Image (cartoon, rainbow, N blue to C red):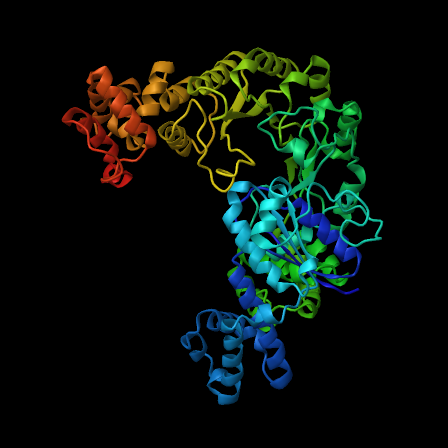
Length: 630
């Protein structure tokens, strides 16, 4: 077929690579199609396409020049239109050449990448519903790059949750759920896309680096037996699948992309599987038994092999350039560094847009021993991470004993509401009894819980850490409705027992703790208070005082005297002055003040002025981070 396929992930920040697109890339590559992956600003993609066309044209008309060396100058000129980008290169002083370049700048301005689309298939993945705006903008842009609108594919989480809304906003009817039936993309084709191995090479086509990397990404079960009303899994994966083998996926990945360090499983409820023991045994067989280590593979070999096989040249040319720069950086002999740099410069291999497959393969004999010299294999511990968490209601001594046979790190256990405290505590104790003492959990809040119930859950984890000599990292996760038309486009939902100020207070604390709460009673009490009353004080506290607590709270500094004996703000106690004034308000005035504070809007004109006592309390909420820094 030799179709041109463009796969896109919208330019939001996310931790995990798009597994769906990686499977689709494998599918199209198996069909012999040209696959391109993109994540970034969509207008920059348009500039790339125009610039590539321009260079192809110039190479035909003026073959005496090596045009790729001018790629960045041409890219910037086409995008911005400033002649200063061209003036530093003599070749653009030639009128005929300049006229050609100006013509392609005009093509960009006139959006000819839309009027003459070049892709036979365009696929866009979607993630969370609160990424609505950037996702819809991406779809509406990308669909115009496809020759036929019927060949535009939209899939993923948001498309499965809000298919009608996406259709209304884009005119594209999205896929719902998994691509788990033959012919999902090409009618009559027998391949099941959801069962295909991932194409890891597409991750080297982009500049974005996913925080979760150097891992096998997989599922060994699908779906969940629970139907929690706050959860999207029953709609995304409605049928529970007990067992998906991992063995062949890892074998294919190792052969094509090299051995990965960790195993990141996105199963939603692995303990519900009737095949749980077989799953753990297969994980062990695949090299992740307790104590398993990983030896860093030769990435250079992988790159060269794939270039020789013509497997995603676009990705592996970029990979080669990264490896070259890394080798230069690691070389200790300055003469050797200079010599190698000049060689790469001579062969035009210092930049991905000038490097060629032929030049990289030609350099192999010289570069290979230098890579082996600068990249000695090292051993590292491997880990298994059931990233979506383990259901505490299914935890028993037997399955925790079985789980301890693999390098589980950390064990993630959801603690979604305080009513589960007995079950949750028992599950943590069971895990610890079986030697699993590195744990992590997600704490849902802003759903049907009260604020103090979040505190109780956090405090329980701190106590369990001390008692069991365990390490439990808690990650409070704000509830966000997935299909409420008022809120699915943003993160503005406020639960029944919460308000905007409370939400901001929790976020302010988490900003200071980098989103997680670990072991250590002193650390916890500084962040959330030593009891529920102090926690409520923090919830109502001005945000600047929360973030700069040590600066504004003399009592806290006194409590932690050894740590802050040289603190420059030893006389500042505004946080406690505010609190005394807040408590001194009459009951009626305090309720009026709370009604204003709950909205978390304190600038002039955002609330109705009250009496002098209330205004004095509210004045503390107008202090900014800049005030604190000064």
